[in-house]
Image (tube, rainbow, N blue to C red; front, side, top):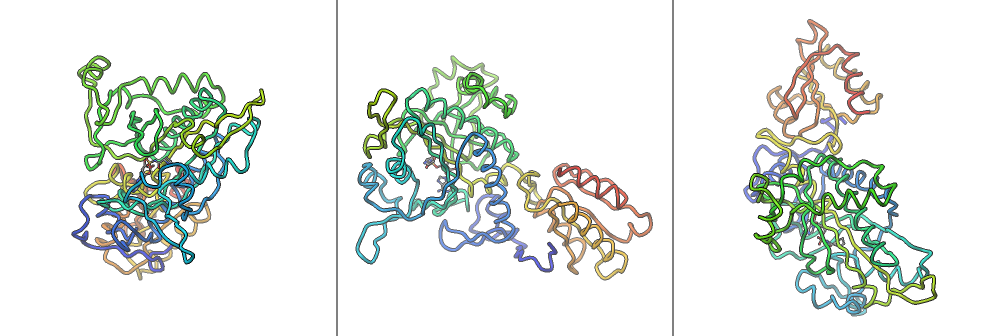
Length: 443
Ligand code: P5A
């Protein structure tokens, strides 16, 4: 993509309503535009990142047997009356009436809708286990929407729902999803900490939040520093249920909780003083095992191998996809702008033509651009007539992993300067090595 043709409405100054750095950087880099409080339009640069995050989640969810579906945003109130949550949900639920005066709502989550799908189509234990997920917009009329996309009213969530015959199998599914979440966050370039949490309005007796440490986070957590040193989860673990259980227990037995369930005595007993951390954090995911809470109230039963009718055991697993865009920026930025982890960067490489109008610079910039495109890379080429200084600042703000500078110096020695955004490392390469070097990085 050439910047001269790209819809990239960057701003010099952050609007005053943006209180946290991620919100400021998202507005300055033209990723989003607020439409009303807590509701945003996603512009090309922001939308690209959102899609990248979705794709990483999809890939990992499919790997553990998830099947993607798409449920609607608008739901009938009847289902929520059946589950008993229609009144409980209070003012956060956006209630709507259609022209026939029927009560509808904009879904804040989908436990009811999925239980209805299940009870309609699945009857036998032979249909299990089943893991369905979708990536869909939600609406919660938050009292205080703030921090940009991090606490929105309309936000994108990946939500999965699991169905198992009994508690043991359902807990194993919970463990798989727990480990899959650790893989997802690590692929997104984040170090996530799983902390025991209060299940709140979703219900059940087992729940973990996945948080990333950040001073602007709304959660307050207490945890054992050991958790930060555990290695990332290998894919092979999912092939053997004993390995799943062992790995899950390693993580889950470490002390890590949200402040509302923190117990100082237990904390002191289970952790050594030098390992105790109390930190602000951003909740990027939340998983729940709630057993038969919805299946009992909504009659989602199945017949086991003895011919008995039993309510199905369920869990639900959420990731804040749109919140993650802000959270990744909170986690990875400097005073010049965003530093995208390679897997989610909207483009891999930025090319800066430092002397637009100069025959050599124009020709070489175009050549590098075309060659990188042919090699399959996503490239943003700054072909505008802006000053070099403003191009440097803009590229740093946008935060692509690699920048290639093409200026008059290259004319003298045939070398092009590359800068790595994250480390600020700079080096010079000839045209061919440059293409090979960048192609290798992204294969
Ligand atoms: C789990 C999936 C649920 O709703 N039902 C289906 C369960 N869990 S949750 O914790 O309430 O939400 C899951 C994740 O969604 C993100 N999130 C938000 N993101 C942006 N703005 C909001 N207002 C918002 N509320 C929740 C969080 O990442 C949360 O972990």
